[in-house]
Image (cartoon, rainbow, N blue to C red; front, side):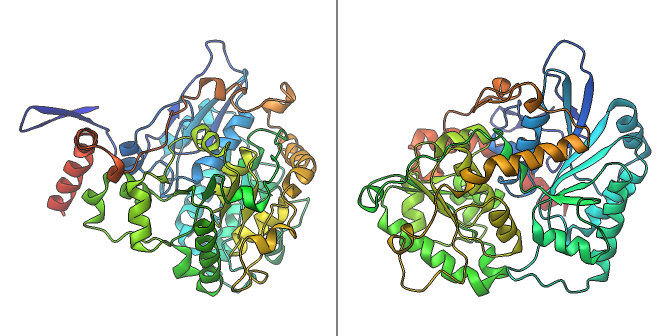
Length: 468
């Protein structure tokens, strides 16, 4: 840590790096020697506590707090008494020293992924390909997918196709097969010449296996009682610009639903949204923050502390445990509610969200079936709110087979029915008591304390502006 003195005798400790993790962050969780040392693609360590400023300044989750869930799910599964876990996050260049450290100290490199097959991720794919080709240890990719429209268009994109081909080939040189998000990504790889079962299998998202196959969805209330219950929702503010064909109707349906159920909470995921909640006008006076809610409704929710962000997975899941319904179109926000056992209604709008909801049999309404003028009550009797749970044993066994085929040790080998807080890893995870409170909801004294905690961020931004 470096010390910074600000006039007024305020001392602040600033992290060494604001935009990336150190190359390797290893946290040994037992004093006994470990049989396996695994390096995991992740920007955070689940047993370390982070502040909002850590997430804002160091970008631990690639601009989206939802990214915590799939990496967390993989680490919770692989974290056993015989395994040591370390983390490394995306870099555009891996040095010879990086490669030597990995080859010398780790038995496997495990890569939890999301929609990495997309044009904007080509530089990272190329960087990982170059790294993997020089590694001498197994490399296992878990949950990778294609970013595409709801009706997939497998158009030729030479740059992306070449980058994906080289990446997949390098991984297959180091493992038995890749684990994909779903059938849409499988169809894409098939078009590139790869073969299902031999080269890849759909496994879904590892976030939904965080607690194995031990999830029970609680009973959905009848409509009259549901209107008096607790609703948790999310909505994708970026999607309205990228997928306007479907998203307008979906967001309108979400808005109508929350107006039917007054006791609702808006869970946001983007780092920019965390800044809005944590920094308030300090941030929003300078930046226009996109939202699916009208400005007056958003301001009202912020003042009443009904907008939430979470900095760890257990707190997020715990908050959803007493929710009577989740509704939304951000997948990992839905995953948190599903892990909590809450009745859920997911609204897929693109190929990413579609293949995941179809693979996991998540209760959902397609954009084609979402009719204008219809309300939540019009769909309740037609939906199966226990579909995910009914198929979980099959999807989970498929996931376990995938891990076994790649010779990865996992907690399910020794602890079959672990629950929330009972795994080797979660017994050491610091659970935040509350989500982040909105700046606008705080008292004057609490705002002063919050502002003092924000000074490193403000000062760093000022230095960055001057240096440019």
